[in-house]
Amino acid sequence: MFEEFERYYDLERGNCLVCGNDKLLPWAKHEYFKAVECDKCGFVYMNPSVNAEGINEYYSNYIGDRFKNQKKMEDRAIQYEIDAEFLESYVSEGKILDVGCNGGFFLEKLSDSFEKYGIEVDPEAVAFANQNYDYDIRHGEIGEDDFKEGFFDVIIFRGVIEHMLDPRKALERSTKLLKKGGLIYFCATPNLKSLGAYLYREKWNLWHPIEHINIFDSKTLHILLGEDVYSKMAFDYQYLGTPYENWKEDYQVLINDIISKENGEWDSVQRSKPFWGNMMSLIYKKN
Image 1 (cartoon, helix red, strand yellow):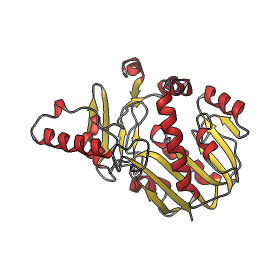
Image 2 (cartoon, rainbow, N blue to C red):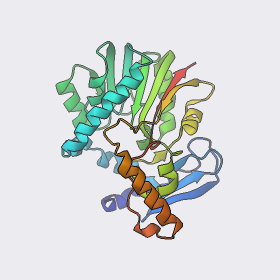
Image 3 (cartoon, rainbow, N blue to C red):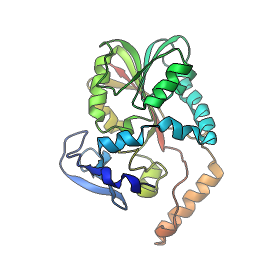
Image 4 (cartoon, rainbow, N blue to C red):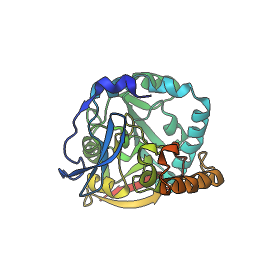
């Protein structure tokens, strides 16, 4: 699955990206990919990871790959509505920026009372968005953008922060772009402090050493944002009621896998199923 990107796997990411600690412990390994855990704050990240050239190649036509799987597109559309409803429980209008907006699909699900903006690294996705929606969608990366400071009421990172080589740069820039009292919304974000991550590690269904190069929890995200700059406003760990829920089967698989691990039969365990706690939705308010 990852072999074609092995030649890009040479980026040493150094000390913990969240707290700067230099004591790193092994967390998971798959073939030549390794994830480490900070001994101080608990942040997990790929180190080394695929370099910027490899990341750019991987995402060069990400939208095209998405269109190939109609079932996933349909499930995502339902989840977009769930994620939009959660956000709109706390804010209903204003200027909103979707970072890593892909083809504008999540922005479409948000109320038209928002003035909608997006930024995306995949040029094909940007072209699709600009052809199909009347939003301000720009090609590039957050931190290399030309948005005005203090311009946005809401900034969204939907399934994005875990992909970024430099999440600190992205969040520092977001803080500048956000108005006082504005919101940052993380959703569809893998949660390190979940049973799935704890039990399965490299067999976790959200283990993806090219895409998910950072694995946060609510604490490490808050530290990176700045605990004195933001207050946690709301959180959820969506599973029940989502298109990914199959709770009877998922619970049974989990129980069987725990038994297999206890009996020393971990090699027989397959990639994990979706489960409660795997994904987190977090809203932080700028003080």
